[in-house]
Amino acid sequence: MTDTHPTSFNGITPTPAWAFQQYERIRQWLPDGLPAKQQPHSQTLDNLAPLADQFRVFVFDAFGVLNAGDRAFPAAIERFRALQEMGSQLQILSNAATASHPRLVEKYRRIGFEITPDQLISSRWLLEQSLAIRAREGTWGVIAPEKSEPATLPVNWHPVRPPFTRQLQRELDDYDGLIMLSSEDWNEDMQAALEASLRQRPRPLEIANPDLVAPRGDCLTLEPGFFAHRARETCGVIPEFYGKPYAPAFRAVLERFPSIPPEQILMVGDTLHTDILGGQSTGMKTMLITAEGSLQGMNIPDCISQSGIAPDFIATEI
Image (cartoon, rainbow, N blue to C red; front, top):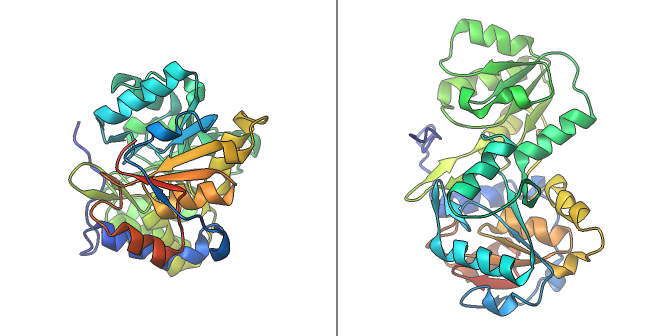
């Protein structure tokens, strides 16, 4: 299946260096991390093996750690399986929101990770839980491709999809709120229409996936968080986010293991500003993976110094 997430926008082609600077630019809108004096001195390891018996729960980011698109990393499959055989508690904490929860579980099983539904927390699932607990009034526009099954959302919704037309602009203006599940097929015309509508009448904007970019093999794609922050800057709306690094994602992990202290949980991710910052903000220990993720090819010590976000451990792969 062809991936249609945007790889450029208004002349921007995302690179790891560009993405890092963008995260730094929006830092005030991210959770607070540890104060500088409390930042750990990162320990460099070859992989996760030396830590296998030091933590009771391992939480893995997906893209850049376990897989890139539909390509699973062989070493990740082996490590995941080895930890399962040891009896470790494992979770995948993903900002993916295009696929429904059952389809995302199915995907990870298909590419080699033998997980059960309760071993996956996705930003899509977190949004759906919020919608179920707190009903949203009126009619909401949902930005998502048809294949993403937006009908699973417990809200009165209508689709918002390209191409841009005058009719689409009128519909945007009438919605009581907007939800963005996916940036697939999103383009300059659609973003301009969204921003024009929100400037005219500010309304709630809920974003399942806060990522600015996602690693998909040989490129980075622009994700919903990028477009949400553009809307914030141009329209003054304050998006509501559900995935990493924000509290709902990490709180959901802690709620699944109420008897386990956060410091006995290791968050493993490829992004300082989402995985590591979010894990730190809830008291978890953290591990940064560098081989294929969003910091691929970057000078990691420089990134840590510039951001002030230091993981407990650094490894090329898990």
